[in-house]
Image 1: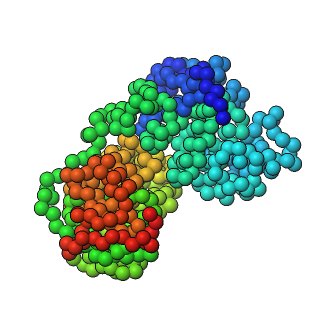
Image 2: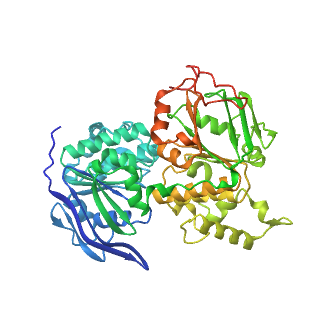
Image 3: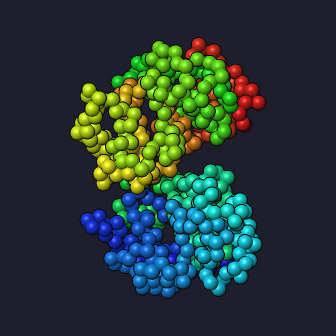
Length: 525
């Protein structure tokens, strides 16, 4: 495919400002995207990204400033005019009619002059999906509501591309995607760039941004703090620009209170369907990371420790008590709390408010003679909302309307209403903006400083290096190496993951015996 970039500006916003009540969402923002480039837009939740996209797409009218699409002015807040001028947008929450099949949604999205005869729309839809190369199952007759979340997100991109736009806006296009789907999306984005399309790529996943983007613009508090060549800016530099403080200050320092630690969790020879045997200990006041390529038993290990799936063999001792690990209720009562990776499906009741979600596991704390003391409950949750910097208009706000970062902080708040000995945090910052990440790091460190042991599984080596006191590396279902705190850095963790299974001088069982080499038949490489 030939490169059709000619450097012309296909989207230009000049001096754009917008205020909602007392909140100033954007202040004198300039932004442009050129033909044949991917221009990333990054910033914390509340930085103004969504408002900027809304103005560019004609859904939001600016208080001041102007918008031009392919050189033509967008004189009114009209999505139809924006589309006519050559702009298309793939929405984060989707815009398809879920009850209608794929073929009908594509047919309705296409301009009338590009629609095939109505009776040929099935074959036409199948051909389009093949051309877009988005790795979507080719079932044009299936209602969009029957697609997986990942397929819906990719379909949203396909629906935007049907209009053959000059500029494409992608709003958090990878939040529901795994690595394979992200790769498929990026192939399509690269193809669009080669065809001369301008792509505005909004994401909080900075590694993906730096991989795909040509330029990066950072918004903070509604202002443009700079536009940078993606090849010349690092992830730590971007983080510093986004949050307005040095990257090194992002990770909290451990309290000296627990210099002399005590064992709080002993795992000895634990084995499940796809992992084991594994042996390790956790001590009071420490945060221990779990690293490794996906599919090497980490999820199953956490599920077993949380009582979600029974172990095949081995022993787990918490606070000196041998655990059966046969129910989640039993493990919570024994002092182990899980923060699941999929907060919406596994942690939160999204239709309920912040208060109800925060206290659901601690209602006895607020009860007297069987009667719930609402005033005490509300006061306690209000203090937590302030302490954890949860942004919510009220304690009764349904969590489904909060940002991903604030949803996760509501989930984390539950650990402050109990006194767990161990917190299992599985991908605690997945789908979370940069600013909220640091609030979550601070919250986990606060719990460690209160005496809990925190076990963190993360796919981000930089996060593990900055947050943890030591890191366990898993491969093929076993712990193959332990990296002590004085050796922790991103490169050391990646090196241990890439090196794979083998005998390590520091990966030892609670009895002090070196861990055996992992058998090749357990888990995946």
